[in-house]
Image 1 (cartoon, helix red, strand yellow):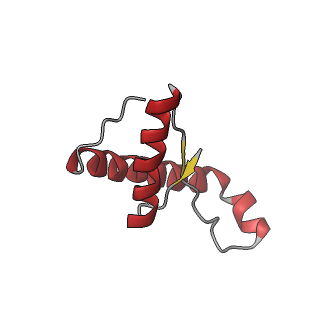
Image 2 (tube, rainbow, N blue to C red):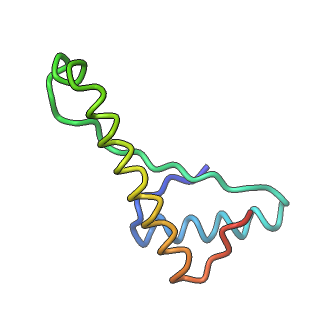
Length: 79
């Protein structure tokens, strides 16, 4: 499990984890966590559906960013 925030340091950790996974014939799981909205609890409950949509858009954007990095750095995404 490798946490990733798309910084150069986290990308280096992903590359290192991939090398280890090849050696040990295992896989790498990436974890990207976003910060919860800075809002009162009642607001998050009231707008849970909208927040879910926003979270989904952020998730897709993060995956797109990761895919771009994988292609640009010629990483093999299949582990």
